[in-house]
Structures are given as structure tokens and as C-alpha cells.
Length: 119
Image 1: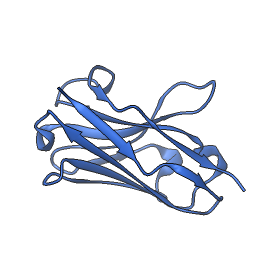
Image 2: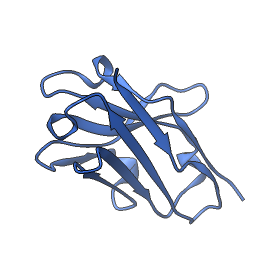
Image 3: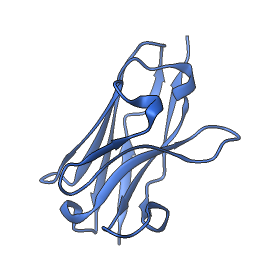
Image 4: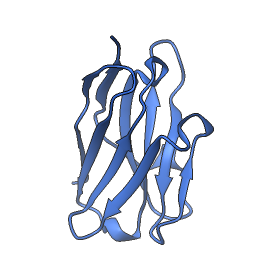
């Protein structure tokens, strides 16, 4: 059984930082493309960042220079370090894992963790 369990969300003031974690089980984690997506109320789910098995990273333009994705294959965990947070970063953040050549939407999803940026 595949499980992706996110943690680290919460309430933070504008300009603050948060670190999200996603622990995976039931997959050969090191072979998967893993990433983070987010969904704000009334909006579609969107890409935040992904990282391949070869550590190639892709970021949404809106988070470049502020967010950093990383992975620890020994711990089957992917991280998202979020700095200089803005109110528009408020959303539910979802972890995703997909094998190579499989679309993210057809991969595995976590349950989501809420990130709220507000003063």
C-alpha cells in the first residue's frame, strides 16, 4: 500500500518560512519523480516544484528564488523549504510521487497540508 504523508504546514506571517516534509512508503522512492502541488480555494491545483531521481529540479515561476525542493532517498522523504512567504502562497499543499514517464496526475497523492500566510 502506497502512502504519502505530509507534515509541516501551519500559519506563518508574510516574509516568514516553513518547511514541508513528505514521507513515502510502499514505493521504490529513489526511482520516482516527486514534487509538491498546491490548491487555493476556488482555484485549480498547480505545480509548485518537482525533483527527479537524478535531482533535476523544476519550479513554478511564482516560487523561483523563494522555495527549494530536496529529497533524501535514504529516508524516502521529499522536502519543500519555503522562504519569503507571501499571502498568495496560502493553499493546501499536496505531495505527489509518480514513476518516470507517468503524468503526475496519475501518480500517488498525499492528503495535503494547509499553509496559511497571514498577519
